[in-house]
Amino acid sequence: MLSLITEKVNLSESNIGRYGNSHDSASVIIAGYLFLLCLIFNLFMPSAAFADIYKYRDKNGVMHFTNIRSDLRYTLYIKEARENPDAFITKYDVIIKAASEKFSMEPSLVKAVIKAESGFNHAAVSSKGAQGLMQLMPGTAEAMEVDDPYNPEKNIFGGTKYLSKMMERFNNDVRLALAAYNAGPEKVDKYKDVPPFNETKTFIERVMKYYNQYQVNK
Image (cartoon, rainbow, N blue to C red; front, side, top):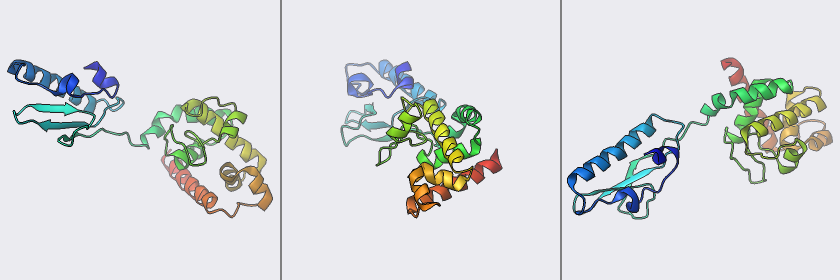
């Protein structure tokens, strides 16, 4: 039962899915109760990993359960509960506050950048290769001494450090700092303003929208 709670276990027929005539009815009932108890426990444990569960009833009336739908006869029984990305705001709040304090940044701005960059998905990877919560490019991660960009703490500290450097470089102009964070400081220097890139303009708009929301709700 514990394995069901801690990881996405193969619940295929070789494990608990098949109960044939060789099992007496008491065994089937007990196994069924244990299985359902595991499922109910997972419903009240949002931090536990929990796979989609499929079922089908065979010609003998026996119920089969699995989390790997290898047979079209299986239909969805219980859908995995996936955590709302916004819930990670609370999960990472301590790290964000610590990083913001260390690099003299506003926590609401750091949160807004994370929201806009990755939606609080620590495993996010962009098509250009940016990684983690604050979408650090490999070169930026190396410069900020981030050896594991998928580690939330290291990524947030590295991204906040880089954002603080952009704020310092552009005299605390938030728009220019965000533009530099997105497009690179050289592009901001070249245009002496926000570069005329739709991606960069949209990024700034999104960050400022989230920033204002977090400021109101803090």
